[in-house]
Image (cartoon, rainbow, N blue to C red; front, side, top):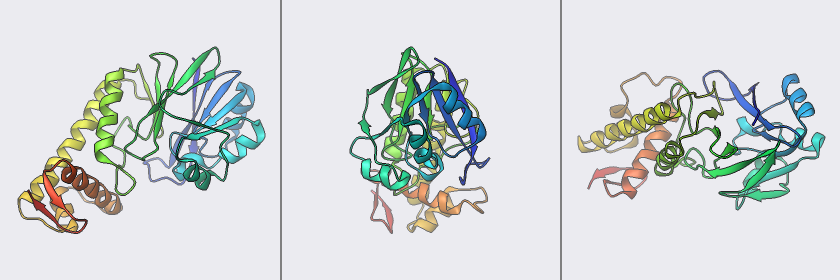
Length: 260
């Protein structure tokens, strides 16, 4: 299946201030994450015969041009089942249809399949291009660095499960929401899992060593300078604390943590 990436300037905190839109297949084609309008994306949408529009998740940096392209193409607009209000609020569009795990849409002479991939967002999905094909993975993974999984939107337990599921699927390539394609998904996913588990160890160690408040745990869990990203790190630590509390490793009441 033909997969074309179009990097769109967006107001995102990703390192390069850009979000990837994708066009999958041709006549009919599927438009994924139309984050904004560019001449290049306009041409792709026009030339490839877009008949379906969907997003991996309705964060602002992934949805800004949904309304424009839906109107101009008269394409079917899809949203996550059970999350249509959230989609409508983010995009200004009433979805035509809803999808869930396993929903298939035509793309060229093949089909794409919806994969539920929560963690970064509760309604996050991936889109697999053809049977055993590459996956448009949204904000599950990036080629370098890591993605934000921060409370209250992010769920660290769900995110780690998603990474492990994606790894077990063994896709030949991942097409992320930000940055270049991921040519070695296994190594990248292993690295992301290890990164999250190491941060979890640091959070748990901080609590075991006497840190109680969120700020104390945050300062003890990061050695690097958090200038400009302290709010993201704080939300990440809360997501780790929530995971550890659910799993019975510590107590966390939203303000104070204690070993269990």
